[in-house]
Image 1 (cartoon, rainbow, N blue to C red):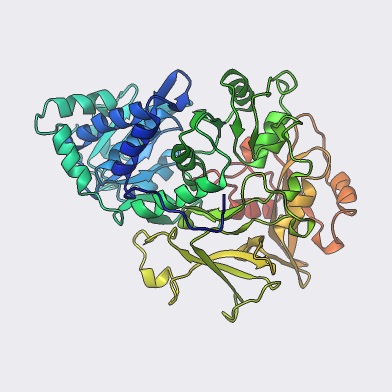
Image 2 (image 1 turned 90 degrees about the vertical axis):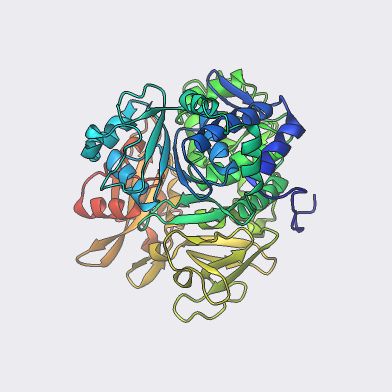
Length: 550
């Protein structure tokens, strides 16, 4: 396929039109699996239609903000489809949120109706909300008036709704629609016909790894067209069964995985939360053919005791190279491009075709600009355009760019030419390949020299016994700023700072060597609301000399 062409789907770019088309094309082919829950494309259309009628019966209308707090799986997909096919704006919420954080996000995004699992992995979302918003104790369904959450009017809980103020989930909403004759299929069809491609479809929040999370508002057209193009870069077929632990509440799981898979008519197999042993069992039992995720997912599975005995012969591709069978594993994974994307650009804005082997000079690239996407690199201090070979801040514009940041003036979001300044640093080569250099605010100025955290992290993970590494600048009374590193050891590894420094001397210039180390279990890393490592908290704890904890 010619990946230089900007591709458009051959239908109106709205969720209601799209889900009807997917059902017509792929029918009873499996769409998504979580444990014993399995639904086909037909099931997704029919069941989301019933839920959509229930939402209409409950008073949800076009532009209503509907929060979705669920793990990956059929329930998440049905809730998102039901809300957006009637023109409501879906607000995916991270299952990693603690109760107080959840209240903040509900308020910030003006969620009016919350669709949630009652519990997940030992966390009781309803109890957590009640502990933070005590007015709920005296609240009953239909009379929700909360000073902390003035826009929230209803909560529908999948599972055991143990609180008087919470309604039941799917079954209760379907029964509500059935009890109101006007909320029939014809009424739903008329509502769907009023949904337009430029209507807002989604408010998705960024990670907030260097500041407060920002809500990117995306239209039906932007999301559907862009994920259609992403799918054209992916080696996906209708018979593929895809495993990916990337959460749908994040842009990587949603726009880079779930929707391209749906465009392709393939099937995705999910977990409530990533577990490497369970993932290996799924790969074998479900005959997974494609595995997508982040490098730590692959490393965790490859180092798990069950890995050696796992039948992975069904795998034919994906980007988790550590777990691919030798017959399909790239000879040199470093010559396969990564991608660069963000919430504000609906996922990747640079990409390369799956399986394309790069030239040695392109090692480490994040690919080229996707068709329909434009970039400029500017000097962060002067605003001057940077030519190829010169590092600058990456600015993006194109059809995939968000409509804006929620409750932020567009004049404070885009420049005069419509570009969004990403805060990422990069450099283009003369062939148009982009190389990511780090976040603008994360470059470490140590001893008068710039240190790129990404360079140090890449060297650290080459060291024996290192599973993951996170590098930040740490204030120092004598030197101003020094390089600090938090290390997640591989299972069973015993590491010391002296051993790592000795090994790093063969990999890094002296000025890049970390002066402060902390060794920490993965579960004790400080995380943002979307599960990324919180660099500011990591910096504070390294500065204080503490092992980081969440």
